[in-house]
Image (cartoon, rainbow, N blue to C red; front, side):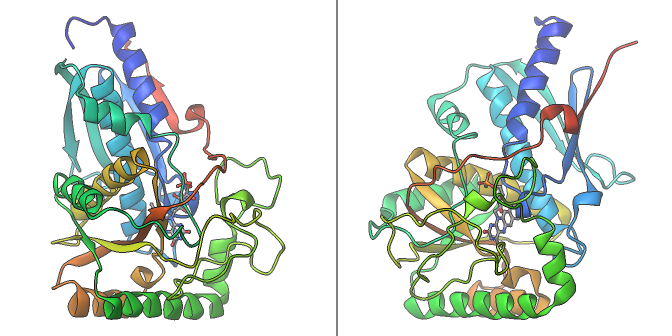
Length: 333
Ligand SMILES: Cc1cc2nc3c(=O)[nH]c(=O)nc-3n(C[C@H](O)[C@H](O)[C@H](O)COP(=O)(O)O)c2cc1C
């Protein structure tokens, strides 16, 4: 990078933050902020956006920020630099999740370009998938993508195990929907039709009515009894698609950030092959259900995301806060 001028470096870093904000985040809370200082981007957790009941430990917040970190890395690589990343660089500042500096010039390879091109195109899916199965080879490649970031993506092939995960999801959804405070926390992030808010889950992000998948993987109830949502996509069936779980060997903040980076790599690679993901993280927000899943189905590894993968058309518009709201640029004195 030392051949670039300070303005060129500032522009590269700015573009990396523009990519970062397109990461997925729980309820689209976008729980991050960035500081550009000289040739460094600092990624910070915005704890005011943490779900106090659903995510008391900040696990989902860290996964969301890990996904944003992956976008920063990909953007810098596409702009022709190596990246120097430090995760949780300062034990005295736990909210400082990572710093990234552009390194030596390095031309991006085709795969980096492929992933980067999906950053703004990828969308969360919230219904069944078409009957077309995700090819085994592609699932294997997605698992390899997760592995490069230190996480494991396991496709759940046994029908019994799929039923168990679906059952845990429905149980968690039922318990959470009975809890008034939990529900209030969730609907605070559900936006009404026509909303101009640039955060939270927009009403066009889920179908108004959709047939349950077989077995049923309960959806979050963002509409909460109101006639919100988009017209159902007629091409989808009741197929849940390929059920997968993303796990890590440990369960510390660095594992969560790694899981987020792995998640984003998986989602972007999948998106490049027109495969969408539906998330069901309700059971992972409940200690006993998460422990049950870990011990009974995942050989003791920690589940970080439950995802169904499949083919569907998701054309809803993505909603994000503008970069100016999340970025502080410190000018050299
Ligand atoms: C840690 C995490 C947990 C999530 N859990 C769910 C979930 O349980 N149900 C759901 O519909 N979407 C879930 N999502 C997807 C977010 O709602 C989605 O990323 C956000 O609304 C932004 O929309 P987009 O992904 O289409 O850009 C989750 C995302 C993350 C990163």
